Length: 388
Ligand SMILES: Cc1cc2nc3c(=O)[nH]c(=O)nc-3n(C[C@H](O)[C@H](O)[C@H](O)COP(=O)(O)OP(=O)(O)OC[C@H]3O[C@@H](n4cnc5c(N)ncnc54)[C@H](O)[C@@H]3O)c2cc1C
Ligand code: SF4
Ligand code: SF4
Image (cartoon, rainbow, N blue to C red):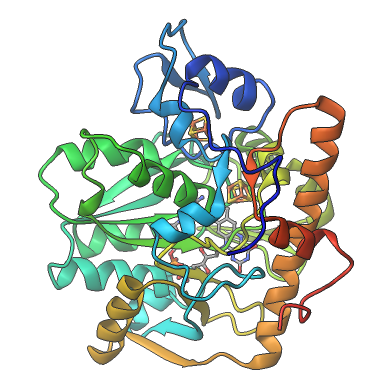
């Protein structure tokens, strides 16, 4: 058992609710736009890309506070809950194995962001009856908001394929989750960014008779360094895309490339980057550490993915998908693993320094509760490699 930081070890006060969600998260620009609180309360609504209370909620306590990824978060407790504490890796979170992976299906690969691993996993789960629905993020169908996203509850091959590709804004996809679980879906697969995976695990962990968390069969998390503010993204894209539908966006190694159905253009990465959401500056997780399976780019071979297996459920599912020839895997090269760890280390160190600084200036405790050992690992001068 690791020694713990006495300041940051207090449990999340159970008596907090909507007032504190507003003061500690919304008013401080820390909302990640995950969407988890939206269907919990009639007073919380989307206002453009922001989440806001439309009228005063008088509740003292609230699930909205408990499930938010930016309210007090005991990471080790969530790791134990996710049953991914078998190997405690600080750099990439707990995991069993890391692979190069891609879809076997060529149509999937041609429509997907990289190797199509996420789309192939969702398709395999639906087509073999392991799930009834997958909660995905698609481009909006609203002609007035062509660059916005929407949650897509996919039940067929066409629907899963229509959600493929990365949208680099923070769509509040999780707002659709309660609705799916209230409906007829017995088993559901959820795909999300790290902040969404964190919110989902918090939701699954709290006692809530209205939320049958056991019906979530698999959580597939994406890697994510940052996402853009939707309004800023729209402002940058509109003059170039002229309202045309976006086919693909990619951020390969310091570039920002946008393709419409007619043409491709490139934005200056350094001028795009400052438009990341404010909440992303305090995001400690790069690789969706609480997912069953985490998927990202390889930053090397564009038609492959990096795939991290974290839980038994993730491992079993992947093994079957490989056996049934839906996913192809190869060993992950050691030198690439070192680069991945380095990227994660840099994000975590930067964020912890920022959180420490904020705590000093505001006198408010940081939302993230880590063991002293983990905190010191990142705040000390050590880099990747010092964990071995
Ligand atoms: C905002 C964002 C930032 C990212 N940053 C990085 C990064 O820094 N480094 C890295 O290696 N990878 C990053 N990724 C992940 C990467 O872009 C791919 O999503 C991932 O590699 C899976 O590739 P794939 O070929 O399997 O995707 P596909 O098979 O095309 O599947 C993509 C899936 O992503 C989901 N999705 C798309 N946009 C969003 C969104 N905004 N929020 C939630 N889900 C979404 C869709 O539901 C779809 O199922 C990021 C993704 C997003 C959305
Ligand atoms: S981060 Fe998620 S749960 Fe928290 S306020 Fe924003 S949308 Fe709601
Ligand atoms: S960087 Fe973190 S907070 Fe921002 S979208 Fe990605 S996972 Fe969410």
